[in-house]
Image (cartoon, rainbow, N blue to C red; front, side, top):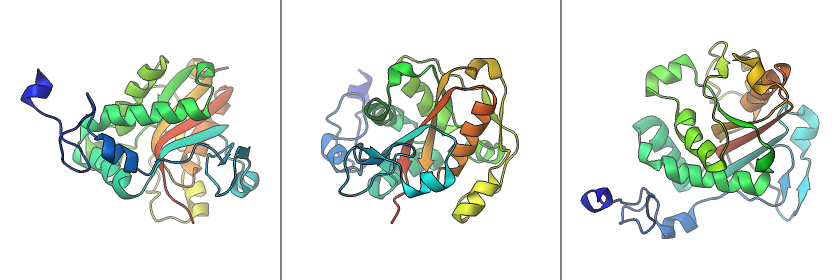
Length: 234
């Protein structure tokens, strides 16, 4: 009845949506820049052209991120960039279920999801909560956890302080900037567990790595990271 009274229109092209309960039509869905799920680094998930299977990329051999695995649904480019920015900065909350679809798909493709124990959202900084009024990772992360049938723990992980904004910082500065950023409020919730952290965008992986390091210091056995998108890299 609500769909009849308030028809859904595609977030990308503006035409009526042909997918029940969603806001991206079939045509636009097929054109989205989804990230590859094969030929990827087994640690960070970055794809390499003309390779199949898994390998360990040069960055992961050099910097050894603290998370065990990471995967992203989309490349942060073109229509995907527009949608994610609209969700984060312009309150396009209705995209939540589309986002949860894509997170679930990449998680099932790249991880043994039956081995995960719980899902945690990346905690937002005080400044971001003040600017946006909400933590976008909580909003779509809860829907994602429900799809997987996993507990969702929104308050286990917190920010110990708010670092400088990561945008625009060189890669090495990003790693230094996030040191000591996180704290685990309830170590017993993660001790001995395989934890899945959900975030919006993976750039260098430095924030997720520091987050994973803190979770492991609190006793987590494994940390997997899944993000809506990752920035393309030359």
